Length: 219
Image (cartoon, rainbow, N blue to C red):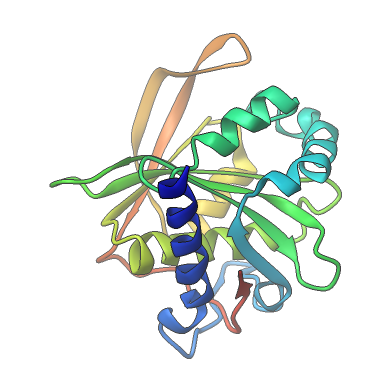
């Protein structure tokens, strides 16, 4: 428990310095007709999930189940939330929440899972927006922050995102942030009782990283 608390405090400290660790000034990119969340980034906070988040987290996650079915399963019971919180040991996984600065309300969840060190230095990105904040640009800004956190703070070299082919909104999000498509894996991940195909997307530290104007606060 002491070790976990120390890791959590260390992560809070590194997240506090995240804004200053990202190359500045950030630039706003326009790809096609999609403009990255230049204003949204200044409105959000990226921080570790904590036990006190449980009531509001579960309320919003449960209200968003249909939004994410069958793409993602979100923690929607106290038991699943407890397991989700416990696996965020900052070694094999880092589980975070995205919150609005003005009211502190939770916007969504962002995770870096399956972290492998040694010669790999990689992790798997997971994310889900909560209603009523989905589709408003918050998640694009939050994932951009998470990408910089993975590379600049955690020292990873590669971040992967596995997305079902029909999840066009999520595919567009990672494409807009500079991820490259690396292939399709049939029957790759079991979700809602079925093995589902997933496209494999990834970004590495030597690729152009997502750039937006302004900076989000962190705790």
